[in-house]
Length: 94
Image (cartoon, rainbow, N blue to C red; front, side, top):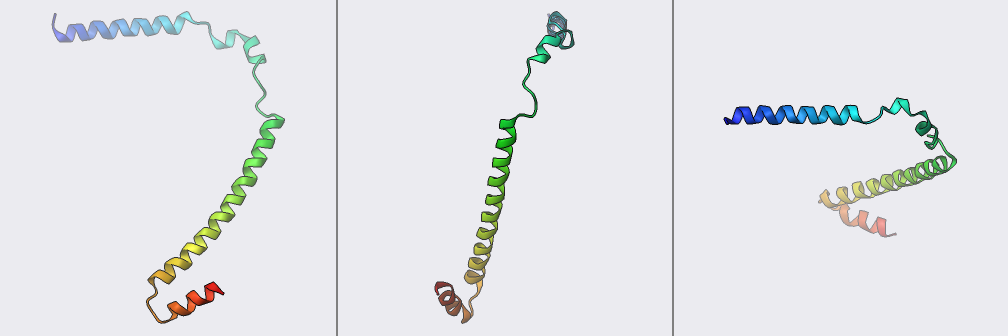
């Protein structure tokens, strides 16, 4: 049997199998009882978790801004080769 014929037979068998799987299971719309048992989209616990995460996010953003400022200062000190370098280091220590 040539390879093309085997490929076509496999392709047709796969398509028939997918068709059987697709049409053998019940439709989701025909079962309204299942939809009634789902949890509500918004709940008190989710709201608390959302607020907690928002507060944590705000704290992390503030911390990241502080780190960026410190990094910018360190980069400026590392790049600056003038005589001001020692003075700025001493000013930071104070």
